[in-house]
Length: 476
Image 1 (tube, rainbow, N blue to C red):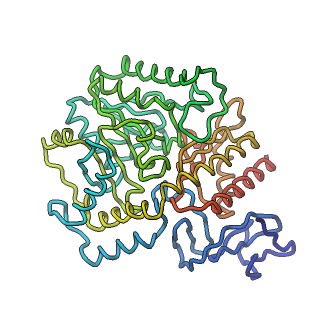
Image 2: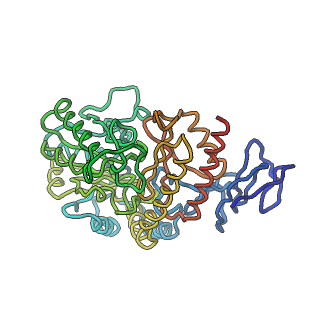
Image 3: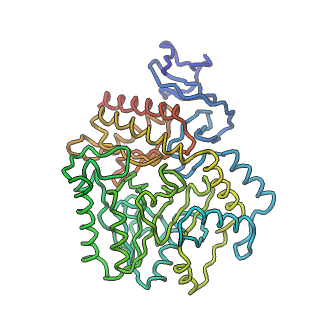
């Protein structure tokens, strides 16, 4: 649905009031009313929430001027069930009135109850939990545990990966934009990412996604040649770049910052086998993929039919409240008793109460099913825009973990330049939609909203994205 403003002056559709702002094509007021100049703009879905400045409510955000935005990035896939979700807010308020803080050297009900609840979401033997404050800290701890348990030092990650920004995890992160000009990465080796769109090998049946690449495929039924090639690259890394025994292999089930990159369907299963043959632990970084976001499963690793030795998580665990965790096996945990591990805020009572409420809310609100239904719809419709626009190279993902990779043209697959990405990005923001960017070259739009968005919201985004692309192509 579209609305047309007066061609004589800038006015607010729905209210009829004059708009004093200048230099903006259009913007949404607190009630969703749209200020615009004289051309068609998709109408934002209604919202009856009455905001204050800088307010968030479920899938919506408001700025200081009362402009409303559909948040499709969720603080980098962090707000899992919705901004200021009433159930989670109530849990936080209740715990704040009872006890703000005591360290985890004292057992208190929120800590014990939450760990029991979280452990119930994991298969055996993943039943030991360490609580942290962030994903970087969780991955840092997992590195230490892997090295202590195996007695080995070297750790392998994918190129294009992001596993944190702390001094130690920066070695796991293989993306120049997140590197400082200092030495880093001791003991960390980056291997080729099995990216079936941008990588040297790929086809039309490789990945576990509603949408496949546009690359042609000559594989026999049930056999992926691209997977064989990428596994061959991993074997070459073992043969040339690391010792014969390693400590660990880190991988996100779907790369987040790397641009929602997906691997061939059986890649992780084969990679885990190779890693374990060399004494290493397999670590799944679920910071962005966990808690039902992929739709088909609660954890991203379940979609690969593997069981890791350790799982790290953060972001969606607390719906934006600072929290992270490492989940591992009793055997690995026992190796960690060689020293004292202490975390002042890990297991904070308020954090545990909030995180427990998040688990309940995901279940009660059907958030995982929303991710599957709305996410699949979004990707299917985005694939139609890929067919329409030469600059959309790839659409991929699972659930509400979606990437749209932009290119100069489909034949070369060269990344769309940063300035062009910014034009489209800012145009969408001005029309009321917030998304993210990622990829090694910043060439991928990232769509990772709170898991409470509706089909109506999806249609609004699709209309805005289509209009932004049309605007860009006209200017080009």
